[in-house]
Length: 265
Length: 226
Image (cartoon, rainbow over all chains, first blue to last red; front, top):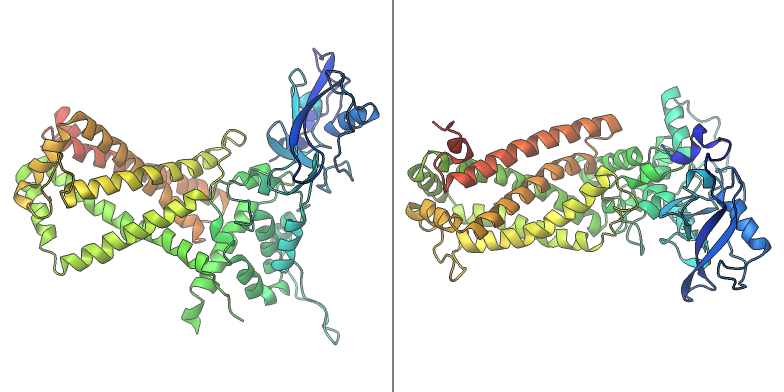
């Protein structure tokens, strides 16, 4: 379960609030340019989140030691932890900056903000996450329903399958699981995000027809066998996807239909 | 339609399999033979002689031990090379197990190389130049002479502990990697079972080690050996 959806986060400020909140931000002006740290301070107020801090800094981008600088760049969209775009590494851990409340982050010590390390850093806190979308294309994370004629209604699904598939469908492609994975990086491993979508599509009665195509996509050189079973992904996932279950279900499918497939020929 | 498998997929599956079959099974046999030392030198030497009298022993040894061992060890180093440990930011038990599995793997690479050269082949000058396998009548004496050296004894305590850890966690990894144990609760249960197997193997392994310098091993020290 993720900590940042707990109801207890919504309280009325701290008992001993600090005077100011200090943010240490990892900055980079352009892709492949040198990175540096900059420290900013802003007056504390209850119920700040990281995005409201960044917006406050943007109004007057002066570092803590009085140097004028450029406003830090980040991405944001939904502001309610369903789009995933504002994901960054906050105090060492990947999470959404919209749902990271300052009051829960110990505002008495500096809060560090870094871009995710597993994706190309475009600028400041912005990363290029297109490899996750490339993976979705490779695993055919869709169900073929288009034909030259009406295919009619699809087969029925059991309620258990619907519930299990719903859990996988919550993925917002934020990248927390990949950032936390000790195996993901440099194109070594396709990662839990794509494998969970393989599970989602393979569980579907119509999607199952492309099962072997999807299994072929995750039995490649960067495939499912590169999982190291550290299980950080399922802990880091803000949407509580059963990512490890997806991986082990697909382990079974790749063993049965891949490794032992020739026994049925 | 068929599933296309990459060479990496096949190599990884082979790596996972060799860890259990034959290497894990061989470790059980090894501890069984070692435990013969509890009842004295003659019993252990006879056990070594019996093993050497296995028909086609050279093929059994090469095909059942050396080739899978070298494959598992060398490919394991390749896998270890890819790790990006992040235990400080994500300090969960399974994440620690991930790192420890790789650290014990590296320890085992050096420990088993030393152990095989030292006892199986007797190729470490200044330490032991007699092959245990080729001199069954001196097998117990060769080992107990070595273990009298506290540094060597300590190396073996570390080596046996790392081996048992690597196998016990490896059993769990095999069960999940081959899609046998899938669900969270089943994995927790399997984890407890592997801890139990690991503790039992550790006790047997260390007891047999002590048996080479104290009659009856650890059980002998507390007066429980028959």
